[in-house]
Length: 290
Image (cartoon, rainbow, N blue to C red; front, side, top):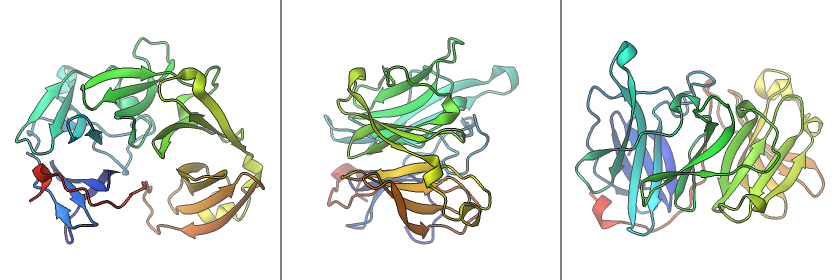
């Protein structure tokens, strides 16, 4: 894959999904497997700026999401776009299954794709997004997409969870769904869904005092009060976080002693950074091999 301009989408089972212009590939760096390109999108399909709720996001501006159908052992890419011009614009949702020679148009999204606020969250065979209802209530919901059945559903948030969409994030670690609650005025709160789909199983895993993160904030991010976002939730109350600013750093937090440590700069770029967890594997589906 050297020498090509690729956009990282996500990694599942050791396979990395990459976007090249209007096409997608699957890549396993451990065994140097590279799939054929997917068919290209038609020219009338316009990409919706990802994370438009906050403005254009350079992390994933293409609304492309990677999922795995365990029942049929198939890897798929779900994309959101729009067709038409002016008042005639309408949203369109398309799905590609690696190994096939075509895209399919599926049921439209049950939410406004311009209000998405997440990087990819794939748990229990479903893709997930945190968004507002379309009914005008502005109620927060987690919308799910079953990659096997290709249908939408809903996962309930923790009961009595306070916060606006700007103050919440979804995360995944070890195939568990998490909600990260944050704001400039309160402490960080990490929620864990112990049993998928069961609202009563939401547990407040830890509370991280904002004032405890105080080491050279302005030096790290160029401004006085950067926010933190989980990258990986480890065992024994340890969380690896990243600073949500242009000069991104990795930070480790240990809940047992309430201390931060192990600062590590991960980019010198002025653009936002989004990373993911990749697990090495020998997975080599025959239908994605070149």
